[in-house]
Length: 88
Figure 1 (cartoon, rainbow, N blue to C red):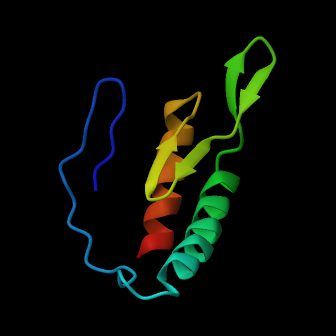
Figure 2: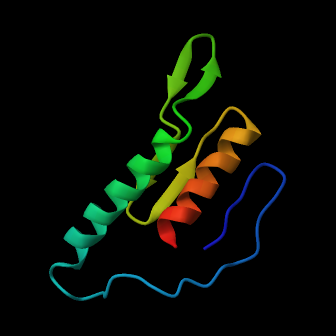
């Protein structure tokens, strides 16, 4: 896993825990866990202000891909810190 912005990309981080693949309940457990994690992280930053009165959710996710969209650097840092706490 790694994080990327317009001008910076972190090094790869090895994931050491997860949900077993192949088990019939794995997709359900994954979706349930991701929903809790994403909701908690999104609540730490609020919606992204695109300007002109337009807003969008600060997190977008599809399967195991997650994109963080924030208007300000401090919001991004706050959300990444929240995700780090949730994943520890």
